[in-house]
Length: 324
Image (cartoon, rainbow, N blue to C red; front, side):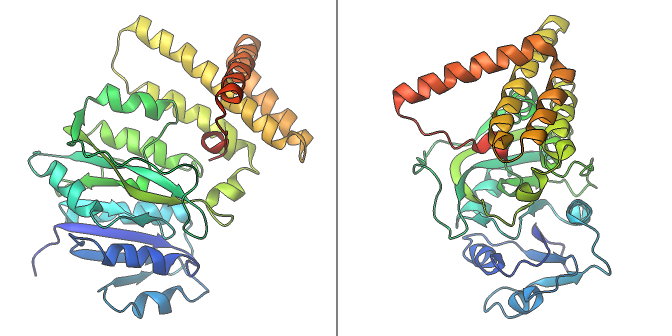
């Protein structure tokens, strides 16, 4: 039996709310995956029934013996890297538009060795309605990024979305795995994986949709100071160390990241201040301990200036980046 060219793996736990729509989006691909694997983490709902009754998809169903958690299940998905030319990890509540696989695979076809390709993404709500203004879909050709060009926004937590990524594996084992960082493990993984790639390709089309809903992991992670705040600082530092640059440039970058972390923490304090004032105080204390009072104050000034600008420009702030 020939090995698959493109493998899509969907890790899932109790996915009956949105999984059917996710599977439908795979079924509509103009270039469908050769192999579709579902890694079920001991679901107790109708997940298995929905998967096995899908009218068109041929699915490889694998159920874990015990619930090993999301990150361990994602790491199981990465174990397929050596069995395929291209690997796509799709979350059970997100969607890919019909030309996603075709565009991403074609963008890396001529690359020898490992590569990472990604598209832009939109955000939808629980009903599939787009959040915020409609995105333009530019018809620009794919472009290759330098490692530093790709890692800079990753270090600032302006991250590429995991389901919008296709890994060209070169049929080699995964060079890195998800670490125990429930909120930002994907940001670090995508930074570390890129450091092992010959090329990084950006497909400037909105071909993936991230579903924001009350049941996703973000909704529970915001209750944890470690997951929602401290792990962000850890990942910002880790990715910045992967950027190859002169010492002075690295120092400037580290100062910028301190200010950015302070500003993000200010937004979280605002978000929690009314309902959970004690937690808001903990966030402030943790941020000041890491970046110092100067950058905490600077972050506040930057945030004030940004809000003033948005107020006059009429832009509505959803606090989406800071709350994710």
